Image (cartoon, rainbow, N blue to C red; front, side):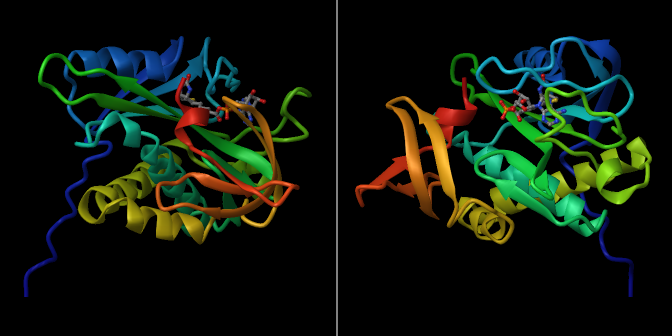
Amino acid sequence: MGNPPESIRLIGKRILRYGSITSTNDIARDLARERADEGTVVVADEQTLGRGSRGRKWISPAGTNLLLSVIVRPSIPFERVSELAFVASLGVARFLVDSLGLDAKIKWPNDVRVSGGKIAGVLIEVVPGRQGESPAAVVGIGLNVNWADLPAEIAPSATSVLLETGRSTDLELALHGLLDSLDKAYATYIGEGFESILAQWKTLECVTGTHIAVASDEGTIEGRVESVDPDGALVIRLEDGSTRRVSAASLILD
Ligand code: BT5
């Protein structure tokens, strides 16, 4: 009997490394515009303008955590790009659970948490295609790895692998483990569709049944999370008994 075929990895088949840059999403967007291959990954030691969604900042001291962006080119319409946040958060959470033994949970739509603290964030940005080309998406991921002294502004709500395990982790090993996990999730998405991703995602999510306040286009929607719809939207039951849907796209895409 021959050896099983080596798995063909898409995410991370090309890894570009940088020292200090503005944001891995900036570099990845430029590369995507220049038609970089799907699966190209940009990694940085430090970001001078690391960003979250809606103008928020992502902070991370140099050489301490994982800061990366992945270029993908799924053949999906623009309205479905937010599905990638589920793919990415599933990939991050599975890596933390399977490789590091952490009890990671996903907070809809794009946060990964351990013991209630945010350990990773995902930011999706779309790069429009030129005429006749489908758009690319840049999936930016920040994962707190060897960070011990979190600054006061995020300390109450954030955590890191080091704080959770008491051990420092080799960043290179963590990068490869994370890319493997993302590759698996993306292959499931392309091969089996969003339904399959959402089913796995739901086994790790932590918002259903909780009370939540979400800023939406119509103002803050507050209530108890009833369920997550098949398209990834959150169904919230308001105090007056009615329900409202909040789409993930409204929160994670600028
Ligand atoms: C996110 O935004 O969670 C998406 C973060 C994506 C960061 C990556 S790093 C690589 C790539 N390049 C970039 O420039 N960005 C991506 P959001 O849900 O908006 O959360 C942002 C909020 O999280 C901030 O307002 C802070 O309160 C908090 N925060 C900032 N840095 C953090 C950190 N390292 N760990 C935990 N929380 C943090």
